[in-house]
Image: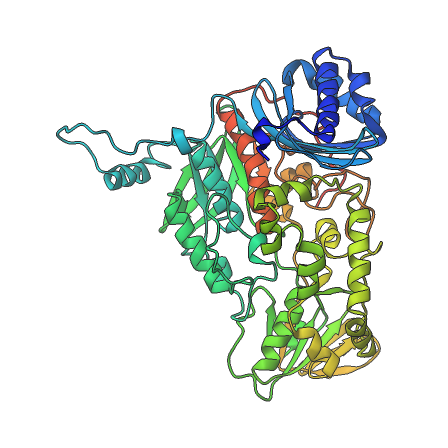
Length: 602
């Protein structure tokens, strides 16, 4: 059938009617009528387009309050289906497009019996400040012959010689891992002058310098960078050095202003100049930069967290935090103690065992484990896989679908998945428990993604190390370290563990520790806790906030931003952060609705 000439389906008409009703209510500023289009506990999640924030409105009153505050500025219009709706009259889903005074948007809608269960609205581009791509791409060369004209390389070298010296960047990104690199690529496409500061000598070194057996635990479809996807023969789980090389080449291909071998020494905001004063050391020279916007893109965590144990300085063997553990080498005959039981602990246990060590893992608290194959099949397969692509779910759509479930209801979507995994892998879990491993599926059974979002820790994606524990090839102990001796550790129950090597797989501190060191403790406390959303679970204290604290959105310190997360988050959320920065560079009005309060300091 020629769909272009066919009549819209009844379902499409029903969804478009809902959109038309929303458009009418918003155009006439009838916010009560707009809110009444939602279920009583309906959820509207907005990324920048309405709120200049990342914000979830929960229930009719919050939706009405937001609309009352922003509609005169936002002036939304043009609500329409982007493609045919799915589902039926009882439960429909639809991709939608819309416009505001400042931007064009893309969204996702779920209707249940004619009322909205969820609405996701996202800013995709700023009117008048679109990326030059496709039909509007740069010509690249003028077809006129003039004496003294410069080649592309000469122009590039001149630009690099001036930026940061004779010309100031609008934005500086501190941290040149995947987060900083992806954000800088977005900003370059938006013509926002940006310098990325990276203390390692090469882009990708933050991956290369980890233990040699490290590989991604997330699949390739989940891990693409903006604009330039991995080739279709890229391995499902890429080794660390391959990722490091990709990041380095991406940095070059995307023509980023990337200052490797450069250390950020400190920053302070100059109120008179309306800019940051940032001191960096590059090639042995101290340079002062004056960006108007400062982004910290230093990963998902702060400093390595190394507990202070009595007697640790007297221990005669080797001690490493997991971030410094080199891996490899002949470990034959060595006794290794790993303190911790999450991803890094398992990876390093496997590495040590492979290289001949007698390995003991000390589990200090329960851990969520999910087999990689099961995670792929049951949790990720419908969004990030070859089967998802075959069904028309691109990476961009997958990112939006994941974002379309606000954190308030994400557990109810995840719990059935992990119940299915627990049933499917019952024998595996029984064997782990029989080996003495303390398992959990999250405090509410919602599994890996919620643990990651709430606390960024407490889980392991099994890529083989669990079998070492089941078989007893890696020994397992439960408890806490009471003290160290010269020859090992003494646990709180009096058990003595001899060790030649101790690895602290004990995680990292809060991201805003970097702010305390590089700006001031006062600024760090003003920004407050980063990550988590107030679920009231372990390491994620309330009150409920509904979005990740301080990530990719305005903080309580003007012109200071936090960017981070895994490869998926760095890719997806970099768009919204880049648009916020571009709007400010162009001096567009950006009234922030619902700026988060700071409930927790460092």
